[in-house]
Amino acid sequence: MTRRALIAGNWKMNMLRADGEALAAALASGFAAGAAADLLVCPPATLIAPVATKLSGCAVAVGGQDCHMNESGAHTGDIAAAMIKDLGAGYVIVGHSERRADHGESDETVKAKAAAALAAGLTPIICVGETEAQRDAGEAETVVGNQIRGSVPEAAAEDTIVIAYEPVWAIGTGRTPTIDDIAAMHAHIRQVAGGVLGGADKLRLLYGGSVKPGNAVEILALEDVDGALVGGASLKAEDFLAIAAAAA
Ligand code: PGA
Image (tube, rainbow, N blue to C red):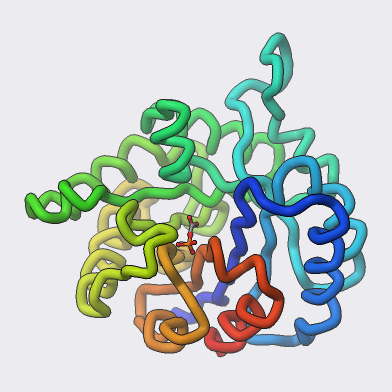
């Protein structure tokens, strides 16, 4: 089964309008149509519209970093999936470990957000990953398996969602699991997700956590790794495009 790679950039809470537009423009001119991977940027909500405008007509997709679980209503400061879609986005990240930690998001919350994304016509990128203490205790596969069983909504199908494995201790630290550990975890995730979804041959599984141009080739070559969710290195067009090229 060949799955098309997805290289997703998570800009997090970075970039004002001028810098975001300049980055989007650099990606638009540097990313070749017909490339082997799909390219996606997830700017802060304030920049989805201007970034989508800069990227219109080119192959780079736009996504959000979070959405609310409800369609609309009295949720001051929150953003509905349909609002993100309305700005030209096709994807939304849900359950990033920074949301799980900073906002106390449970698997149940993440599942409801992913369901809201699907209902709005967005592809949710559902994030899972163990802490360092959980890995040290030998619990990584159990923790991640439980997160998948708890966070994937009933309405999901293997080709309507993306799952990103991001070990919490590898995010923004410059540290990554060994190649063997990434391979083992991704095989485990495909097996667990396959049980939940009734098949996972078409499911795209991204690795995230300190992906850089220097380690991307090795990580993206793994059979069960179908792309990357990139934080820090997605803020520089040159680095992000080099990671995309590594997916060839
Ligand atoms: P990083 O972040 O690439 O800066 O480690 C990845 C992420 O949090 O998605």
